[in-house]
Length: 227
Image: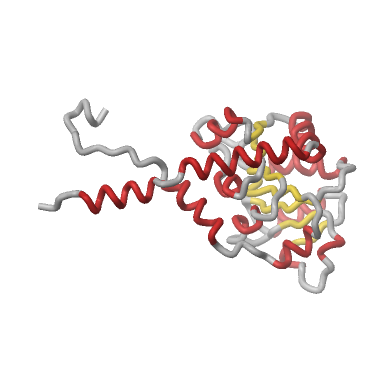
């Protein structure tokens, strides 16, 4: 369109968000308390969840018979909502704010009632569920778990997000619309290691192949003649 308007100095750079999330891999993402909780057990990280997401997640947790742990980082961390979430879960659950002096390995569910550490937590995920996909605004950021090579499950409202649409089409990400579909997605990813690894590889490769926009922009700026 810009070329049609007579703008000749145009370059396509891509999306700098891929560079930002790819750079996360170069940082120290370790969290000792998450490692203690995980205790070498397959772990599903639920990030930026809303109540509708949590309805599906809690239904699966309470009926789950598999050796899997959950870390839940809700979008809203108001005390009342956190307590309601905790009280709805029948498995042994601990809050981030209650973690001190606890043997975290003994717990099945870890609720993160703080902010700022979700990106690092994704590095411990074997499977990620990213919330928001049942709301009007759509799914939250799926690139953070993707950069760690984690298979992703989301709700049905993702069409306005190019990266989510691409990963759905590439089969690195699974969209679910109800409790039954979530159950099928989780059970397959829990039980079939090859499927988990393949989808995770697709996600990690997707981020890696789309990075480089920042370098293109900086090179273009440095080569631009100033008058």
